[in-house]
Length: 184
Image (cartoon, rainbow, N blue to C red; front, top):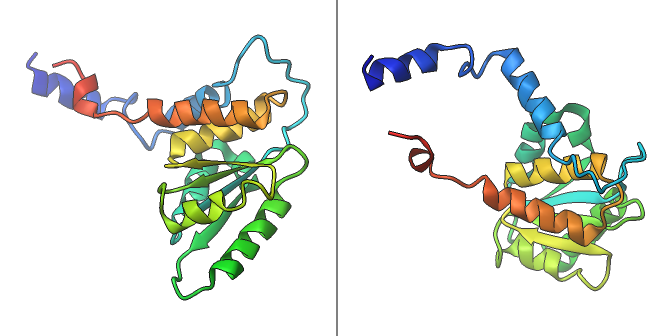
């Protein structure tokens, strides 16, 4: 069978069908079990680390919607701050961010994810590092957000810094050029 025919058959197969609910259920199961670290004791309580996404425009809100499609209710505990108006005063945006962090954080600190290091959302978030118990991760992507959510739910004994390190690794690991991964 020629490569094109074989590839065409694969694309038509059930295992590639993106609309197949069974495929997404398997993906949900896999993602929910990303944090099966034997040394971590999971006591059944959700980690109270807050998650706040601070982005240009509505990117954060859309990332939350995508995470909710994959993980369900777990993703509804993420907060988003949109930095969309350059006419807004920095102090007002900062006060808004502090309020959202206070709402999201329940005792363990908060991870603030921004879209672009050096951009207004990132600079605004970095400005509160000494004011609240937060860590700021720039370059948020969906795999990073999914990892944060699963770590918070399944690994409550991890501290804020460890959660951020693992989320950063997950975000970097999932960046790929597909043609480099597919054997020719």
